[in-house]
Length: 299
Length: 185
Image (cartoon, rainbow over all chains, first blue to last red; front, side):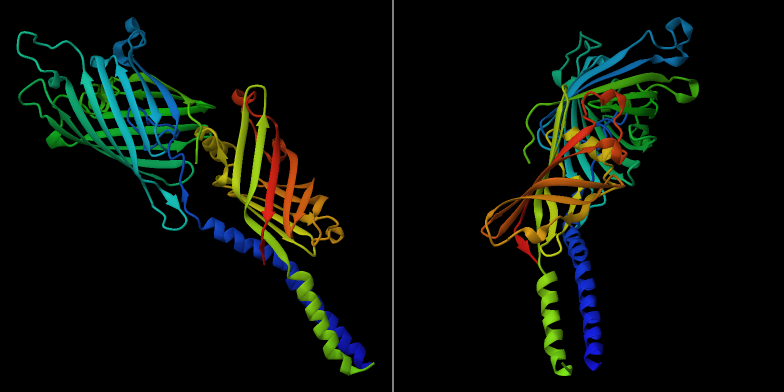
C-alpha cells in the first residue's frame, strides 16, 4: 500500500519533469530567436524611389543598379484650351543614376530647361536602424553641380565658362515613422557664380520638407515643399510646392504630379520657380523610372 | 517490496527524464533557399540565418527564419519581397513547428543517410498550414545535417501576385533547406 502511494507520487513527479521537458524545445527556440533579433537591422524603403517629385529623397539605388529616369513637365494648366491646358508644351530631363555601393550613388542628367547639364553624388552618412545601437534617422549628403549651356545673353561682353556653373549642397534628414509614413527635411545651400542683376544674391538658402503616405502597397501620395529663407531668397520667385503619386509596377515606378516648378534640378527648382498655385500656374507632369541590375550583388 | 526502493526508483526516473528529454541539437545559421521559376524570370533568395532545432528523443523539429534575412540578386526584388509580398514589418518571421517521424529508428551513432518525414505547422505571412515534407538526414561522425526540398503554393498563404508581374513570379515556390545541427543544448 505504502509502496503504491510512493510510486504514484514518483510517477506524478516524473510526469511533471516530462511536461517541463516538453516545453523545452519551444523555450530553447525562443532564446535562439531572441539572439538573432537583437542584431542590427537597417530600415529599408523609406521612399519608393530616389526622387520625391522634383527633388531628391533620401533613397539610393542599390549597388550595381542603374536607374534611368525620364522626367516630363507639361505647360501651365491655366494657359487654357489653345495650349490644351499646357499639354502642348514640354520640359524634359533625362538622366541616369548608378549605385557604386549601397551607400553611394552618382547621377547625371540633361534638362531642356535652360539647356542644363547636372551631375551629383548622394552619400548616406547615417542609416535608420532597429535592434542594438539603433539610429533614429537616415542622413544623406548630396552635392550637385549644374551647367547652364544657353547662349550668353550678352555675347558682346567678356563671358567666362565659370559663369555657367552653380553648386548645390543638400542634406536630407529622413525618418520612416511606420511602414506607410515617411518624412524628410532638406536644408539646401545654393551658390550661383553668375546672377542676372547686381541686386540678386549669389548665395541662397532654402529648407525643404517632404513626405509620403502609402495608400496601398504599391501607390503612395507625396508632397514636397521648398521654403526659401526670406533673407536669401531669389527676388520675383515663388516657393516650389508639388503634390504627386507614386505608382509602382515591378521594375518601374511611375510618378504623376502637379507642381508649380518647371525646372527639375535643385538650382532651377528651388530658386527659379515662377508659378503661383493661387493663380493656377500649375503644371502636370510625370517621372518614369526603370531600373537595370548591371553587376552581380556581392554581400 | 517496500519503501526502501523508493529512492533508487525515483532517482532512476529523474535520471531517465534528463537523459531522455535534455538532448536538443540546433543551428543558428542554417540555409534556406527559395526559387521561383517562370519562362520570363528566375528568382532566387537565400537566408543564411535559419534557426533549426531538433529534440533527439521526442523528434520535435522547429524552424524559425527572419524574413528580412533573405538576400536576392536584385536589390529591388529584395525590397519588393519585404514590402509587398511577405510584408516583413507585419510578419517578421516564418516558422515551422512539427515532428520528425520515427526518430527512434535512427541510430545517431552510426554514419549514414536516413530518409525522414516531417509533419507540422508551417507559418508564413500570418497563415498557418498543416504540411508534410520528406527529406534526408545525414549523419557523419555524430554531426547531423537535415536536407529537404518541398513546394508551397503562394495563394495558400494569402500572398497575391499583381497582374503586371504575373509572368515573372511563379505561383508555386520551391523551398530548399540545408541545416547542419552542430550545436547542443
